[in-house]
Length: 81
Picture 1 (cartoon, one colour):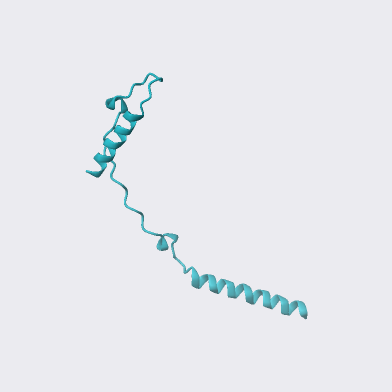
Picture 2 (cartoon, rainbow, N blue to C red):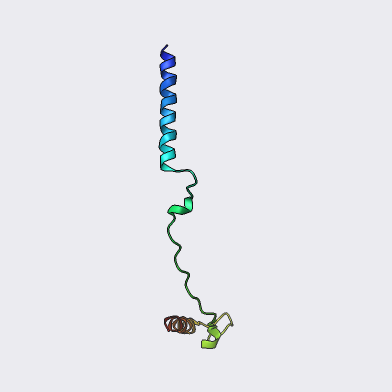
């Protein structure tokens, strides 16, 4: 008889969990229903900034830090315009 009461409690608990799940996740609910909106994509200009245009030399020896900085600054100015 003890086992029978235990089985009834287990089934009652299962039914309760199913009922809670049914209320929490209604039929036909989609995961996208609660999704956050997608952020707007940035507008990326179709312009290239080649560091050799800013004085960089591709010899593998010359330090081109200033040319790289200038190209980054030019790209930043273009993006802000």
